[in-house]
Amino acid sequence: MEPAVYYDGIKLQKQEFNLEEDLEREIRINSKRLFGPKTIYLNIKKKIETVALGGSIPDGILFDLEDPEDIKFYLVEVELSKHPFYEHIFPQITKFFAFYKNPTSQNNLIERLHSFIIENMEIKNEFEFLLGGRELYKSIKDAVENNQKILLIIDGEKPEIEEAQRVYTDTWDKLVIPEILNKYKLGEKEVFILEPDFSREELIIKSEEMKKEPEKEIIYTENYHLEGVNPSLVSFYNKIKASILGWDSEIIPNPQKYYISFRKNRNFAYLDIKKKKIKIAVMLPYEKGLEMIHYHKLRKFTPGIEKFYGRGSFETTIENDENLEEILELLKEAYKDQEE
Image (cartoon, rainbow, N blue to C red; front, side, top):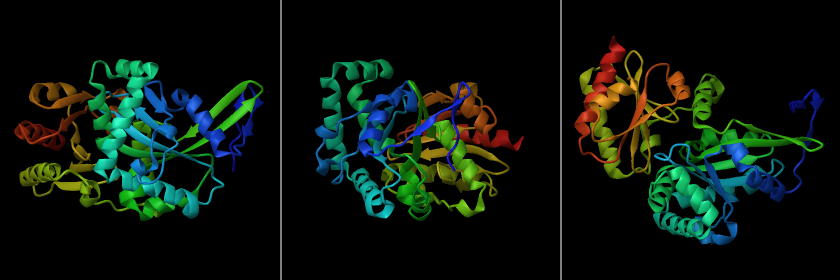
């Protein structure tokens, strides 16, 4: 059932999108309203060869620079809900999976994106402002290689998407973020409703809520997170895991959709494993991280993320096994803290 949307007490009329191009245009024009002021949406369909993206071209490219140390990269696919899923939408998205598994294709896209950005002064200036002095090419490369997602924006419910996510956990569930976008209008007044809200915190919380519904439950494994990851990172993970399990026989790894946590009485660390780095949310105050970590990156969480975790917490990042000892000491401190 469609929601009723009111503005100043007056009911707004839902705008139907007859053509996919109409929905694409609204997203392009209103990208900052929809995705946030620190996102950059690129419309470069005419600048990319289909072979570079597994035989298909996305409707857009989105960079989320909310955290310039952890830029998120999205291939954007825009679809109408009236399109058949398995005949049209499914094969289109599947081609992007092939792209994400092809390092050569990724390098080609990185080069094209970099060229496009530096040739467009307004876009280049916006990137440089949001990057805060960080090097442009390296930032693009890191985002494309490490924070790969597919943003599927559709104008209505499509039950087959959820079905595909349950069946294809290593692709549809892992990489595809579905968003429903509707537009309502009254004269010159326009209201857009994007579900769910486009933010990392919202997605994490939504995923946890979904797990409470038995009929939607998916069993996640460590292999789900380690597939396609740089072998050296798999080795780092195994070292960390072996050390943690050696502290207490009752500690268990707890794989979920967005992370692998380690817990005894409760979770004390959450590992988000990317292709070339491991980001660890540690359940300790940020000040403890400053005290104990000297060779790895630290990120202070927003109040919203700390509220989700329910206690003082922060993030540290591993990109190699140098000075791994300080990470292990930090995790041991977090383990001891949850015991108290």
